[in-house]
Each structure stands twice: as C-alpha cells, then as structure tokens.
Image 1: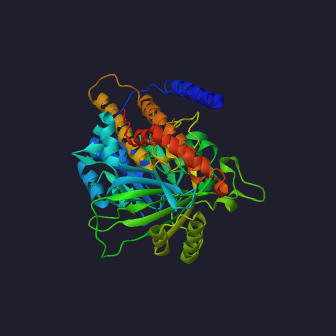
Image 2: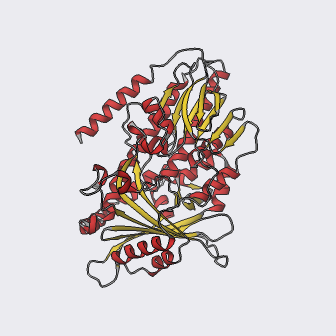
Image 3: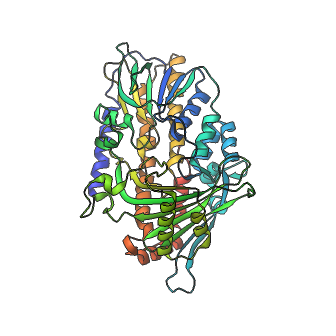
Length: 505
C-alpha cells in the first residue's frame, strides 16, 4: 500500500513538472492529425474530431489488411454510449439499432448444499438501480427516457463507427500500415514511418489508438518503436495477468426474433467464472449468444510470473491480446475444451451448454493490462519539431482487464475528451487570445482521464482474481460469502454505477 502511494506521488509530481517543461514557440492551430489504429478508440476519435473541427485533416492508419467485423467478443456500452450521444446523435442512434438493450444483471454461485445447482446472489434491474441512485448517474445514463445500457458485438460496433464516418476528402483511412517510426520532417511537423517504406508527414498531432501493444506508447516511453509488437519495452509492455478467457459465439438463426431487451448472467463456480448473454450484431436481426469462461492459467502465478516447469512466456500465454479468433486449435477442439470446463464447474445450466455446443466461433486469450504508473505519461513532443506532439487514447493509454466491462466505454470517453481539448485549443488561437500551450492542455486531458481509468483498472484486476474462486476453487467459498456481504452493503451497485457513469471533465 505504501509503495502504491509513493508511486502515485512521484507520478503526479513528474506530470506536474513535465506539463511546464516544453517549448514556448509561437502557437499554431492543430490542422493535421494522424490516428494510429482503426479500432473503437481510433474510429471514435475520428467522429469526435470531425463533429467539432470540420476543417481538420484526419488520417487513420491501421496495421490490419482491413477491418474484421467478425473479430472479438461482445461489449457492454453504458457511459460510452451516453458519450456517443454527446458526440453525434446519428452515430448514437446507429449503435442503438445494432445493439440490444440490457434490462437485468443476474448473479449466482454454485450451491454449497446441492439442493439446486446454483444459489442466487443478485438480480438487478438496471433501470431501477440508476433511477434509485438519481442525480448525475440518472442524468448521464438515461437519455430521452431510455436507459443507456446496451450490448453489442465488438465487430458490429466497429462496423457502425466505420460506416457512419462522413465521406470527406479531409478524412482518409489507410490499411496495412504498420508504424515503425515517429520523427520530424525537418520543417516542424511530425512524420509517421511505416513498414511498407512509406512516410506521411506534417502532422501536428499523432494519436496512439493502437491498443494494448501500442507502438505510439513505446515511442513515448522509450523514444523508439520495436519491430516486433510482442516485444514492446518499458511500460508499453503489457502485463499478463495469469487469467485466461475462453469464449464461444453462437450466431442467431434467420428465424429467431429480436426481443425488446435481454439479460446478462454471471455464474461463479469452483475455479471458474462464467459470463453469458446476448449481444447485438446489426440492425433488425437477432443477437449473438456468447459464453465466456474465465479461469486462472495453471502455468502462471498471476502477474508475478510463470510457475515451475514453464519455460517461456509464449508457451504459457499463447498471446492473443487483440481479441482475435484462435486459429491454433480446431473448432471441435475448442468446443470440447469449453464443454469440459463447464462440466468441471458443475453448475447444471443447459442454456450455457447449448450455446457452446452450437457455437460458430471460438476464441481463447490471456488477459493483459498496462501498469498505469508511468513517469513518461501519455504525451511526448517529437524531437526537432516545432511542437508536434504524440498522445495516447483508449487501450494504448490504459489497457485494463475486462471485468467491469469498461474498455470500450473508456476509449469512447477518451476520444470525446481529447477532441474537446483540441477544439478548445484551436478556439483560443482563432480568437487571438493568449492560448494555453497545447501540450499543457493534453496533460490536463491525461490527468482527468488517468485517475478515472486507473481506478477502474485496479478494481477490475481485483475482481478478475476474486471472481474465478482461485485455482481449483481454492477460495471459492470465501468469494461467495464475501460477495453476499458486499451485496448487503450495496458495494457492487456502487462500483458498477461509478464505473459506468461517464467522467468527462
């Protein structure tokens, strides 16, 4: 605990000093922005910038050959959804059409006495929780009398964000662009170098939205970019939590009807935590059903390192931090492995078993996060430039465990806040007022978002280890009792709503 306080104190002191340690040259408007990464954070930032700064030249560079709308799992949207409404009502409505409303959150644990397979822990109506809380929570999470709590497949969300980008000659999207260097072009602007030999230059701002293995984060941390993304250095190297997620996605049949709302279910078993629910996959069609089985990696002692007998990191983690499809094992093998995990959990839920048995896609990945305490922060000036800057957004800034469902939500909020700082800075330039330096404004963005996302990261990490019940259910009974006590005290509701409510100031 004392170590954590010391890290926090040093971090804040360094960030305060660094916000005043930059060049004081003549200020100019931000006119050309590079967004590295075309995922949820990058596409959200493009929307936020375009809605507030129509004349900006925006370039999105993505390392993939194209956007894969079938990749990834389902995400819950709440504070991020509310933020999209502030950003662009048309985009917000398109996301609502593609997602599904979540009405209830149900939690249960494996029964201790075998009179029934499971015992209820909680059964929350989301709307009631929000209205009972009232105040800012209700104002932010209920818009036009509609609760802002939806579920959507990650690919479907990216497709909506991509399809709703306005056709604009000042906004371009390029694929197969792997960033390998950032420098100055000798004329003041920032340059992006790519592995295909091309260079794009004259950027006033380069924004890293390139996820947990961010090249831009490594540049800010170390002043260089490693050729191998799996070998990032410094705090750009993601920490493996020792928690693994196996999940199955079952696409809806054409005959299935779309319901008005759906529920999310959490089941706590011995040595595993099972999360299941329905996630929207496009307008006017029934959603996908997803099952996630979360457990501890038998070969790792949490983030402390590999257990005896494991020789390499790659062997232990089979790293898949980008939530892409697992091609290392066959569909039949993945299905069999998940069914074996479910049988071991012994919770007697036929619906979950059917979803796995009838699954169309299977994924397996390790949970990664970033150490939020970095003396380098989220911003760096490009050397030899006249004020060109790099800055981070989304998972590149604060990759977090998914156990509070906040990764996508916080990325969207980052995008909104960052675009707001750029808009405010340009407005000061246009009004001939003495502007606050851009780097200082980006540091203000970082300070505001860092405290929120660090709190969520810490809580999500603790939840992840607690929810599994330990290796082979070592502390499952303690977990069940602990959760029951917390429910009586109202703690889960507070943590849930605190994380879901957007913090945009």
